[in-house]
Image (cartoon, rainbow, N blue to C red; front, side, top):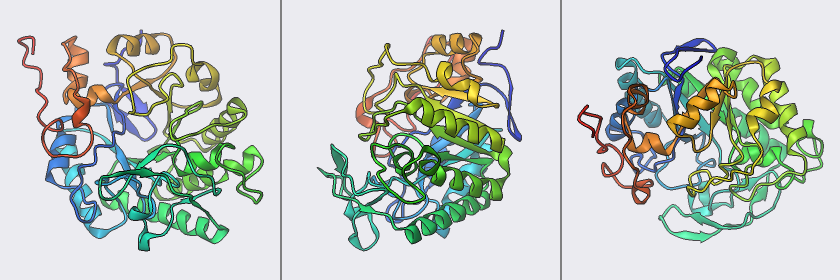
Length: 369
């Protein structure tokens, strides 16, 4: 029987175990400049026992930012900051991928170059609230629909980010195509009403995601590129009229490219960090979609060590990504493999701040704590 402790070949890299650290937005980069720094290096190196660390979502450009304190990968200082992180993780024997992010309409003019409106596939304002650059809640603004020349510029930003990630010493990159951010906004017809080559048919709506993936493959090779998807996800006001057809096509195209893995958020976990309630009646991504991707399938979505092991044993996934449990248990992989108890997490310290709730959770001592 396959267990979480077993090694796994993931594209061009070999993982020591199948316990993945999911990307977790923590809003603790150095300001000004959104630069990773020593505190972030400490946080990641504490978690180097994961089979693979996938970093917090990292904006490919200033236009791609949607939250205060999130790191970038588009300036020299950011590359140098991330290099500090990757060196520390590698010295501990860990593997680390950078998650590439453009938030699209889930932004605010205070984050944007020259205070311009956020961008999106179509001028459709999401419901809900955004966090401004000043850490204040505000209503979402009407985004500007991207022109074709704008899309070309964004593709250049993704390619440049991939090159910067290689310079920073990462083992690979994960393209963030989930949770209602820009690439997901293009995928789903609830947010994409374009009539050009990036809208209308499923093939057209998937075009930008696949072009980004192709750019990443050009820089990294297919064996060091992953993609995150969230079929049926409703976070950030997302919807699609036929998610089975859409994500079947996307996964088949990704499979054809031979990428290292797909990382799929189970529909039962639609809040993407916004809450702890799971929908037990939601369809199963692994049952619906896994057969359409011929490669390692990472599943995420509110797993416990017990449900994760059961998913592996049932063949529903090749590895399991843990999010909130990795916030409060820096040695989560070691704890799971040893059958040790887990620390509870403190939601109030998830976003922003310094060491508290970030690097001060205790490691397991073997004495029940």
